Length: 208
Ligand SMILES: Nc1ncnc2c1ncn2[C@@H]1O[C@H](COP(=O)(O)OP(=O)(O)O)[C@@H](O)[C@H]1O
Ligand SMILES: [Mg+2]
Image (cartoon, helix red, strand yellow):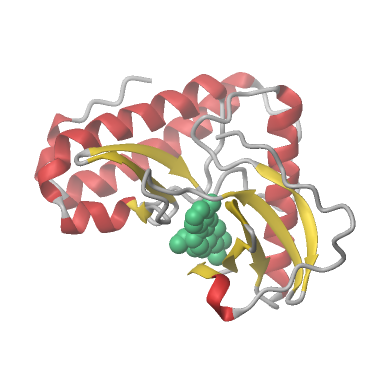
């Protein structure tokens, strides 16, 4: 997902209120960028590791940007900005075609099982993306994937969180083989969990 970052020149601090809140995670709160619905601003919660993890994520996104990898399935990171609630981190916002904020894959899986063929397609697309671009996804779960609704029963997946690695001492240049091994291990774990929950997942074949 690639969009043009709004200019912040001349804007000192972005004022955020509860009305701008889009979603809450365990580590961050996510707000709509006032006046720029294509973007959201994430504010780490006061806890120390929230900020630490945010910094790690930023480093990983910058590394991906330097590598020039496709950002088709991730919400691009556009830099940090001062807000009335502290330092915020700007990302693309995921919205359905009608402009509403897109919903989590988890909610679709629970509430609209009839679209299972589309979910299978979407999972294959994510698998392909992660392996082809060698993108690590440490927190691979169905709350960190949003489904952008493009029609009555068609979706595009977006990874909003959990991209990168969580290791105390990051090895900056893991070999390609080691990266692929890590991705495979995590992907298999994710698929196994889904297979335990949904019968239709028996149709899913990991192909990487
Ligand atoms: N790019 C985005 N577009 C739309 N909503 C988002 C986006 N990123 C996060 N959200 C919403 O904010 C919530 C928390 O964001 P997330 O990045 O997952 O935080 P955490 O790191 O605390 O898990 C998400 O579950 C989702 O509801
Ligand atoms: Mg999350």
